[in-house]
Figure 1 (spheres, rainbow, N blue to C red):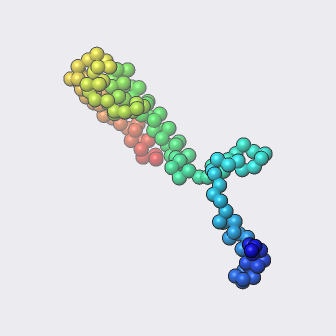
Figure 2: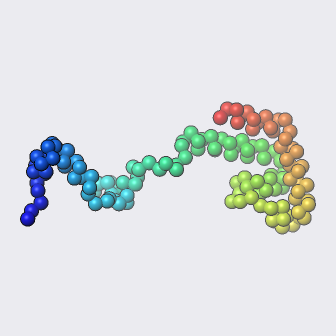
Length: 140
């Protein structure tokens, strides 16, 4: 006939009824992460679950600082050189572009884009620009 009571289960297992209740609660139906925490709040269970893939705040700050420093160094180039470097290496761009793709964007030959890239990289290797990024990398 009937399901045993919590007290009966506890007595049979020689456990405290509270422990039996705790174990029974573990076997309940799964709860959706989209379920609201309470009637008084719009928060869902997923709002309180840690995301292991989330970036740490300190890493986000460092990444923002690096983007700023790279932007500062690149802004010392001519606008065309800066855009070529950004496109070529995917800095602030959705992808890295080939010399041909960049050339078609600027209506220049692949060879001319290569020359612009080399000149820009030479400028970036200059001591003052390099020191800016080296100082940042040592600080992190």
